[in-house]
Length: 381
Image (cartoon, rainbow, N blue to C red; front, side, top):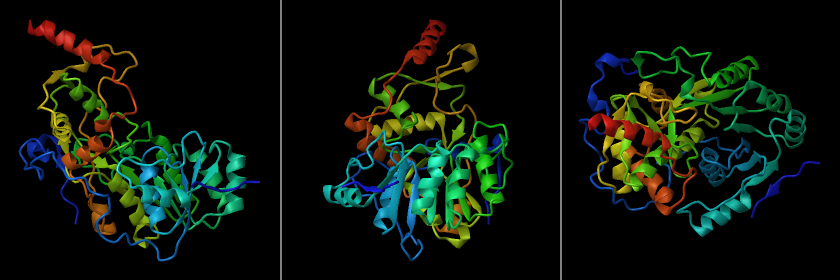
């Protein structure tokens, strides 16, 4: 027997050859922030969430690492019955930095847990069928085969909301990526593409969210943390090639709000939405933004040619060495969603609620930096 446990019109496409440096927050455009001394504010998404009128019985696949932590809180606050499906390796409810005792107590008294392994397909089918859910948020699904048992178990599912990735797009010289752009069936995210195809073929009411790079407190990917480690240690920041590669980051809390916006929204039915920040930023600009966010001096940036080094299996830089950003105009116009955080403000939120408190996911590893900087010093001498 399975039991649930309560825990107490689009802008024109840009050709890369014509990209002005002002697309970066730190290459010509004004910053909305003049100082990194922000007053801490309680996170409340701007505007009405506009979800379906009736409370839903919602299942989140995952939910205890990063995105789901913020999403589940919004859903519970809106009155939905929320169950997290996890392997039970992490606490189902843990108080977030900056979260009040009363808010945490309220959340932990309402969140439910279904313990299991999503790769145990028989268990998934039997447990989900026994409980029944109106909506599924699939945060950690990577392959279509992981989704089929969920669909089999819930034939009357109202909506399947899937966390895909902007990494599915085919590399191009014409950016930003739009939801209608060509995709790459050979990308490392091909499983997410196949999942989107499965959802279409099964005739379910689905919505797919494609984030670019996600950042924010509790981020388990070394995005901003990679920079913060080097800034705290007073080390130079090694950046591949020119440092003018343009990329895009979106705050996890803005992503959570977007996930709420599609719930019960007819305009989101069988639609894909790119979700990220409003502006793009260069690699060099991101290093400077992280320094501003943490109150560090402007960093020394060392550029290098990755082809001149053998890093083995280690990753010397946390971003793909290319221009990579997507249009979020569809989400803004169709869903009425817009990012709450600009880049420096969002990085400051991440730093003050996480790394600045001495918490991080991965210890600093400067071994690839030392290879790069050692060669740089030899060349300079």
